[in-house]
Amino acid sequence: MTHSDRILMGPGPCNPYPEVIEAFNRPVLGHLDPEFIPVLDETGDRLRKVFATDNPLTFPVSGTGSAGMEAAFVNFIEHGDVVVVGVNGVFGGRMCDVAARAGAEVVRVDAPWGTAIDPQRLLDAHPSPKIIAVVHAETSTGVRNDIAPIGAGKGDALLLVDCVTSLGGIPVRLDEWGVDIAYSGTQKCIGVPPGLAPLSVSPRAVGHIVERPQSWYLDLNMIAKYVTGGSARAYHHTAPISMIYALHAGLGVLLDEGLDNSFARHQSCGDALQAGLVDMGFELFAQEGHRLPELTTVVVPTDRLPAGVDEAGVRRQLLDRYGIEIGGGLGEFAGKVWSIGLMGHTARQRNVTLFLAALGEILAA
Ligand code: PLP
Image (cartoon, rainbow, N blue to C red; front, top):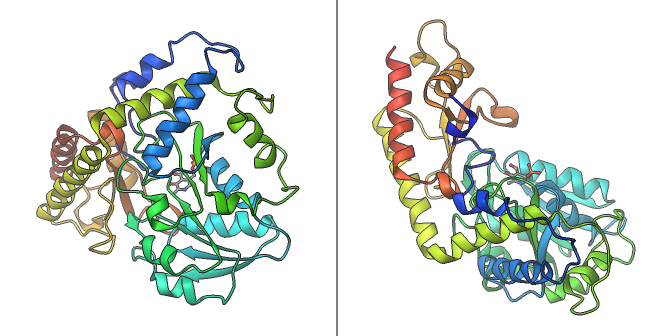
């Protein structure tokens, strides 16, 4: 088994689209080369379509999804600002940490892992927060949190949403939902390797960017000049050219397929996987009605594992015998749930069929 045979069905990166792999072969240009700038501009245009927004400040932050998360918080927080954060998994918890390190007074709204956060609890958590933050698709539990009702009731607060696992896989509509600050990652439903964090900031939120954010590298006051400066682009940092080509290509594949078609493909694969697991007698972990099609969590069937094999051993057999990678659960559910991703190029019926058959064979041994 060579690495190129791997089927990446974990919660991390998916298999990139073939067009994306080809994009890495494009010659590397200087980051201010006149031939590169249009690619960067078009990448911004494509991101606006995928985020369903008109926000001029929309661009890929250099760094993985966590860099997007940091950029989304540090640029808007001054010491003592109140930030309400919904937590129903690992990444909501990480948001609290990032916001607190940036000096925020964090008001944490917890919901049991595996369930969705009640939007009204977030709206009622504080009378006048500066930011209300929530993860749209909580990768660690496979749960989708509703965003539109928070946007409708947010008042003067800025609504900050993590779209790392949702963008491209399920509907994300920043402008319609009233989202002010959103970030994502390239490696999930966009079908590109990890390395960039698409970020979008509403004009209202741009007015709230603090003068001197705690991070130099992620300071939007400076990067924005670089990405939206029109003819007068300034050097801020050396853009990761090849990653931007790859993102540009991945977004092209997604838009050529059509966003609605991509959502339908993810949904039908997720439905088939979840129905197949239930037919095999497994218990799905995420709350019904809030299950992500692109990331399924299933309770590890400890009583059905082959003799002498633990859950990690089953995952190891999936990898060694079938080339299929799945995840072992994150945070407090490590070892207790399996996370099965069907994201981007990996969201194919053939992968669902192969995975279900492979798991059945291993458990029957
Ligand atoms: N937010 C969510 C919902 C995630 O799933 C992840 C990563 O899986 C992150 C943030 C962090 O992204 P990265 O690992 O690319 O830094």
